[in-house]
Amino acid sequence: MAGTTKTDHALERLVFFSDAVFAIAITLLVIEIRIPELPKGSSDVAHLHALKMLIPSFVGYVISFALVGLFWIGHHRAFALADRYSAKVLGSNMLLLGAIAFMPFATAYYTHNVNQRVPAMFYCGVLSLAALLNLLVVWTATGPNMASPHADAEELALARRRNVVVALGALTALAATAVSPKNGPLGLTTIILWDRLCRLRPLNRRGRTGTSQ
Image (cartoon, rainbow, N blue to C red; front, top):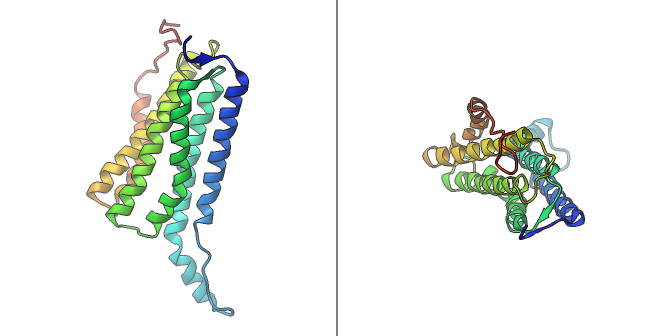
């Protein structure tokens, strides 16, 4: 098949490199949380107040950690179903990794400017971009150029659906943020709602060749 090379080594290198970027990005999230600088001998109250001021950063860390984790899980599951390398996935995968590596900055920018429209939309915009790129990568990895001929059709469909759900949640948060910067990011919670809605639709059990199984 044109554009497809059956080289396990190339596929493994792509996955290992991607895992490394995900791991570094998710680690850098906590580095963006600045340690409070208090005079030596400061009271307990002063320390508690300093930690209280960091609550937005802690919340942002938890949310971003969870979302980057979801992106990695989707990426991992999709490539677990692939057994062939295709150059078609390289461009979209590199763009995805670029968005993931940018997450620590987007998180810090938003958590230092909570309730402001531009920072909130910037954060949700980066999330949406990462979600859409991850969806593109997943669809390529589970498509005819890369998916294993022995992969279960239902597993392929499920891998795609899970990433569609995350993308819908991110886009919902982006749209909601444009209306309400304060509450917009809460739109990410609709990932659960989208998941339930998508579960109402039967999975497409078509195989790689498009024939029913």
